[in-house]
Image (cartoon, rainbow, N blue to C red; front, side):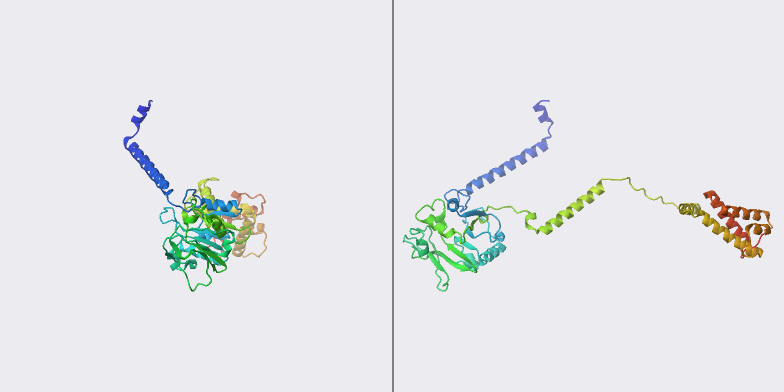
Length: 396
């Protein structure tokens, strides 16, 4: 069949819906691509970005200097002692990828610093400062005039002398915070300062632009970046927080829940699957439903006889029936206990009863007693007891 013939056989409505759906998906994919392309022109301040507004040069410089660096792409609640210094750069307000940390993450960050961690905070967030997060200072506006920056003696010894800020923001001076040490001040306010927080330390730089890829090579900015970010202990790891810039590692539920709970859940699922398989696959013949019918006395006798046969007690049962019948005959005839069966039979006047007694005595003595013989013996014993019972009317 030709291609045209195949197209004629296609249902028109379903084909139109399918083509429309494909067109909509293609449009959404193109719009998403355009949006992602447009976001590249925004200063990302990310170590993944090698453009002028990224921090890739800062990251690579530390790696070339032999410092262990990594990108932290998980929530701040996963911070532990393996990280010596965390570099947290406030994302740009126009960056569509930025992720605002949750309250639990902020609390985890404060606990980590208080426990001995070192935080290099780059940027300014007055709202966080007013809320008292990490005792961050507030920023204020200053006139953009070129003045030589005063660098602390420790950083000057590392070769940091020429620093030209790019922002008009400065940290507010605090008269009461005697524990705060100013690292860089150009006469209009501190650019960088440091202070202890618990057993850890926070270093805050208000100007994030001087460490961007297009600016870090100017003057002594690279040396200053190295001096700020170097770890506090030998072999320490410096981590750049990339989750705040939109780069995250997807955590699966089995990596978040406690290990014991995950094992218990797997065992429960395995048990359910085994139960389903056992219910779906038949491993033997089906059970027949019991036949619902009324039982007769014949069924009871047959069941009782089968029970006696399995227990090999038919001869003993028949002997007991004969002894009971013999005692009834003895009482009726007035004979003494222990009278032999032959003598008892001779005192019975009716010939049919006498013959029944002799037959019962003979069956009670047999070893090869069959089912028919057993049933016949029980019937004879019952008949004799009726005739010679003390409460019955004697028929001889």
